[in-house]
Structure formats: structure tokens, C-alpha cells
Length: 149
Image 1: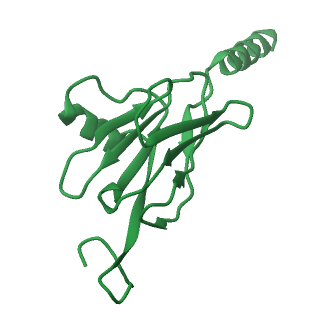
Image 2: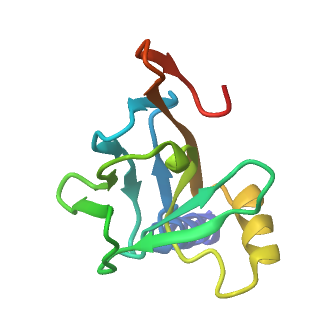
Image 3: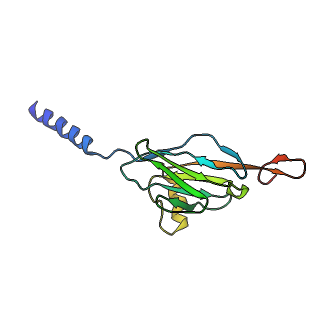
């Protein structure tokens, strides 16, 4: 009986020492906006590391690394709030060419090889993606068109 109790206590200690699962979450809806506006793509995280990244994928193309914390790009800004566990991507002066699949990832998925990037993004549950579709007004009539329409 005493031996069984020690085994149970050992098991509990091992479980308490295990690291929690890293993960990110994003809303399940597509983001639709008008060209020229600022678009915010939301992402929340639960992780012990602060390595958070965004990737972009155009149709019929592999995912491409876009931005990470402390990087500066002209139209892309990261808004991080560690207390609220939020890591949002803002795209200013959005253009129709920004229409793509955007993925928020907890950790670097690859360093250099896009083949392994594609495998890791499709296999790795630590990456969550959603589609951004931008609309624009076209022609003299001012009708609303979608990319490729």
C-alpha cells in the first residue's frame, strides 16, 4: 500500500513539472475591408515564449514569413499586449494585393527552407490562419468589386 502511494505522488509531481501547451487562437471569420483602410488581424496566445510570428500565403503559393516582434515594415505593425496575451497585425493603407491567408504562429516555423515552412504550417497546430479579403471601388459607377472579379 505504501509503495502505491509513493508511485501516485511521483506521477503527480511529473505532471506538475510538464510545460503547458503553446498555442495561438484567432477569430474564425474572414476579414473583409475596403482598400485604403487600416486592417487589424487579431491573435491571442498562450505560451511561455515571446516568439510570435505572422506568415502570409497567396493562392497557389507556399506561405512566406512576414513579420515578427521588433521588426519594422512600412505598412505592417505589430500590436502586442502581454498582459492580455494579444498579438495583432495591423496593415495600414490596405491594398487589394494584401488579400491573402495570414497565419499567426507561436514560434519560428522555419529558417530559410520554404518546403519545411509549408510542412510545419500545415502540420503544426501552433499556427492558426485566417483569410483577409479586401474590396475596392472600381469604375465610374463606384461599384464594389472583389479581387479577381
